[in-house]
Length: 343
Image (cartoon, rainbow, N blue to C red):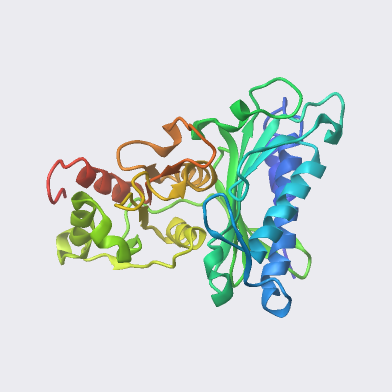
């Protein structure tokens, strides 16, 4: 028998009550996102039983082959965001441009559709066919224009302007992790009742770890300072708790989720092929950076704070070093060339 539990919606409503001026729109928007991800979770869990695996034969704006489930997740999120009536525009990694939403979808003529939602509909989708955990990443901003459908200026805001961010990981269980700037909380989907139930309250990432996550297949393509950093982590030195353990799944949400709970650093540096980095600032780096900072961690492009980057375009890429604060600081020292082995 359950003695007490808190659903995701109950939790966000309780958080909303701390702010008397709140209109309830953000709470409803987050509930809409949770609903969309429940639908996506259902399809992910039975993907092998229906004709939803494999490629569509098309490429997305990133030049990547599009998976059928990518398209499905993207369509579900767009539809729910539009019908919810709280957004003036949505931005998806799968779309070349932002999608403005007309005022006619507003639920209340006296309340503006004042939010922008960015999402990566299905991160790690290259792992779909082999049953590796994948996820949805989202972030929410307030519009800067006053009315009407959203504009590009609404969509291109620094990460510091986020009012909410989170992800849903579809694995052995489906879990939603989010922040509105008041800590990080995790909810696990109970399929028997169809609700996300609070399972991880006030998540705090360990300050230092013994784990790193990186695609070492790119080792020869990295700049020397990054190669030196990884070599340093693999050296044996009991005084500095080395060597570190390598844990790389190849699905950003899954790697980040593990490190958030147990500590670790995830890095995707720039390389010869991707001189500006590979991960997307607006759809991946910003929301996860907001989360990790709220959990006591750190996020950097190797030279500065991710959340301080001024975006120039919707699909801007960036190097990413994210995770336990001390581990990220150490990586930054190597990249700054302060010394070869900064302890």
